[in-house]
Amino acid sequence: MVPVEAFGSNEVFGVNYLILDGPLYPTHNPYPFYRGTARKRPTFCEALPYDHEINEFFMWYVEQIGPINDLSKAFRYVELARIHLPSQNFEVVEVTKGDATTLNSGIFLGFDLSSGGSGDSLIFLSGLSEPVRTEMPEDPIRILAHVIRRHFGARLNQFGLFQSVEDALDCRKAMIALQSFHADFYEGGNLDVFEITGISVVLSSNEREVNSSFARILGN
Image 1 (cartoon, rainbow, N blue to C red):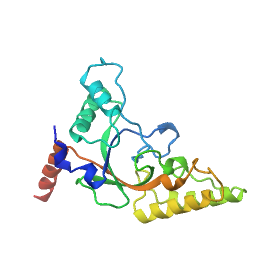
Image 2 (cartoon, rainbow, N blue to C red; image 1 turned 180 degrees about the vertical axis):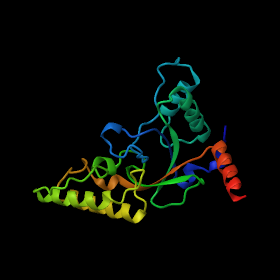
Image 3 (cartoon, rainbow, N blue to C red; image 1 turned 90 degrees about the vertical axis):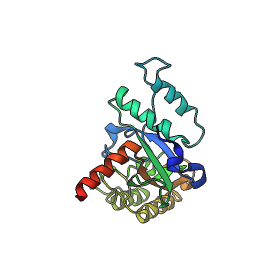
């Protein structure tokens, strides 16, 4: 197992670590490879005993208050899930605020618009990743929403995320402005809770060693 100290402290730097699987609603999502924060969380493995190691790690996960603070346990759950839950594809993700520098040399995926920095995504709630209909709606508010979807939906990358923080910021401002004319249009309450979040996959020590070895081979 890898000690969390090797990755830095999420309490000091305000970094949030999550264990995430695939999209919440894969059958309704035209971006099946979406890898933002609105994804499935760890699950109990009903096929195994309650005291099996993977279920003990699941209980550890649900007892967490706030961000994950032990990456060694997070990686161990992912390792066990790949064995006992092969239909799922969990990974450890580092979430940073805005374009803040990550603590780990992981794989950057893009920027999301996440509730509280780790929950629902405005990309999901707004249908931003869905195909835009060719016909223009008649309602003025829906005309504006249509334009927002057409403009910013085209700027999502292959992971259903924004490639640039500027696009994410502009989209957030546009959605907040539109909802100021129509309460609860995208989501109930204040959209200010949705933050620009950078999403990166955190690599385990073994994955980093493999990548380093591969890079050395390519360099020779």
